[in-house]
Length: 224
Image (cartoon, rainbow, N blue to C red):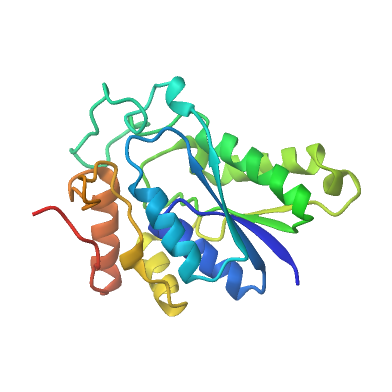
């Protein structure tokens, strides 16, 4: 059976990407990262999502990207914004995060002799991160072709970003069709101690709008 490494963050998009990889016939090996994020709710969600969608294994890797700082998601001194998605790159962008994550996923894919890496990046309804754009995925594909044994031997590992051109509503409809339990996922940048979503940050706003546009009830547990 063909193999894929799937980046699973615990969020809505990565859960959908995992379900799509499984639908395409891949034996899925999930990878998540404890990278120094201010809350661990997404890691709990990632574990539940991976289990519910029947991955072969789920690897959790420890990183210390909070040592670099520079993001509201890793540095408690930077406030998470609540004004909605604006112009430019927001302070919730974690510098080079997807590059680091994809590099480690690429290494594991080589070890597994996997044919593909699935990542749930999206360039339509998103916060404006530079490492979620099609140009970035295309550039990383070229890097993977050059930097791996499979690439040199003419059988490169495919970097699959199946959601990149989809609206949030379309993503939710696809996941619902595939049986994703979005009640297990979390998108919030600033959940409380019980992992209830704030309902105000960019990620919550995009999630709420996506469910509304899809005409599907939002199963998220929000703070009252």
